[in-house]
Image (cartoon, rainbow, N blue to C red):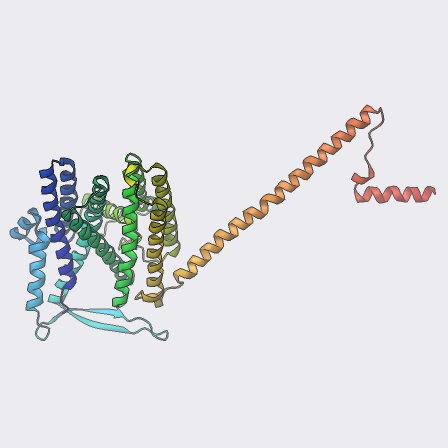
Length: 461
């Protein structure tokens, strides 16, 4: 059994960020900043409550008839005592030589030379429980990252920009929040890979982890800085930006579900009623919207699917997301540049905009490197992301060239027609003024008429 290192990482980030938020809120209270204190506590306690809700109802800690576990969850200490304690007890007590297997799982290996072998693996009781705990901590890390750490990092960076100084406590919580968001995005990537390729044995290499970490670090840091800069100069308009982003991603899975005409999903969890299923689906779409507010979610939520995840690899949706996000960041930075205040007097605005856009492009570059070279299931791709990107660019360029080539032809035809009509009108007016019959000139006659007149002249001659 592997050592539960990722459980320790998730637990460390959870506890460290909570302690840093409590310390920072106490400093805000001593300074008289009640609003900053309330928001700091809100963004630290809200994801903690959502994590307890997930462990109680989704992972069914409530159905175990264990009052101590329920008490720990009510005290917001469920991951710390109930889950973590059980994980290390299982790891210390595990004995693979004596434990009988509970089930047999069949996984296919990555194809080599076009062939893929199916491997059977015995899963013991302790290993099955350990897998459940790891999944619970992975989901808790994603919730903590995007429903707590991301708003917390944005808030603390905004306070730093307004006050034009950074304290020790604020720098610590911002560093922990950024690490928590990047780690949550990394876990989201790994979860997406394992869900999409569930029938295969997925092994992620260390270089893949490094590439994902750099990709998510540049992407998330740039996004947070852009939002903070825009908020510092246009405080009211940022509400519209956030609401449009949030409701677009929140309602998009529901719109696809309603358009598909599928029945309401009933097979998500047997113990859940229709109301409970609706609450779980709303919570999933809430988390989906929170992730896409700051970075690419790596999954497409599909409500009418039993797995709730679309397993198809759609490169065009990925490219459209990053192109639209790049355009949005550029527009927000331009608005900040035009409306910046005196607090940015000593900041070289054009250089800062260039650095942020280059950093975002660097994150996209690491993403392309990951999907091209380090994705554990790249052999299963029907087409690579680079090929899809080139085909998308060809479609855009072809449509632009077609539009440009069709516009001059239409304009030339219109100009010729208008000039011809104008010349005819002038000739008719001239003949009427001279009192002569209006006869068409031979230069405007059709070829058949010209040939007929020349034959009559020849016969008379």
